[in-house]
Length: 320
Image (cartoon, rainbow, N blue to C red; front, side, top):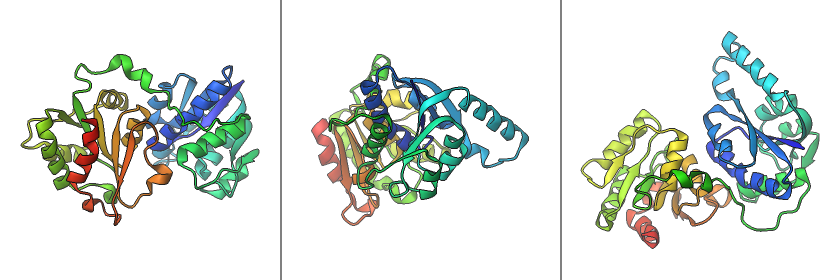
């Protein structure tokens, strides 16, 4: 028996699918799982024990030059790889028209997905052979767990889901593990940023503890922001450019993490590291940190700048 998972992006959404995969692997130990995922996140499924084959897709990159010769060749190769095997069950956990039309529709096998009342883009449900109803009021992870359970025919126990990837990094922990904090200060949307002044105030509050602080980054402007945060503090290190797997290793070794609402915050949760996530306009009930020692600090007026460094430090102190 072989299952194809279609969950391509974003980082947080891909990570949110891992507990559902763990459920399925435990209930159906003879089942084999393949996974279609955006090329930038192709490392993530490889960390899970149940994944056999990862099929990278590059819709984000292809759509910049959809009809270019090299892109057409890449798309053709992807479809060949996608159709190489026939699947007993195809689960489209992405729930978007682009995933349903360009990927799920072309795979060989019975196609499962959310019905039009449960899905983000109702038209996508037209491309599924079997449609399932899942309440929109549930946390994103629980919604995917329900979709997998209904697609594969088993009952959930009610226990919290298990990402099952933390053990992948246990043998790779840095030598200074447990002696540092990580601050995930960068995110793509402006309204999700915490002010640099607030970050620096928190850095100052950490100084007497003797713990180091490490700042990862992904883009040039994020690196510049990290350098500004670290300026004048001996206990702060701006990390070099790291791969996603290398960032995960650093997170796995952290004593605790403070983050804004970003994909790496969900990776922290998947690695079972204590994490305080700061929220402004976003409702954490549906997409907030899920797992052990995950705490949300929500602005009372939905403005990130009104979250004080002192309040964050009070929450963080329980782990220090």
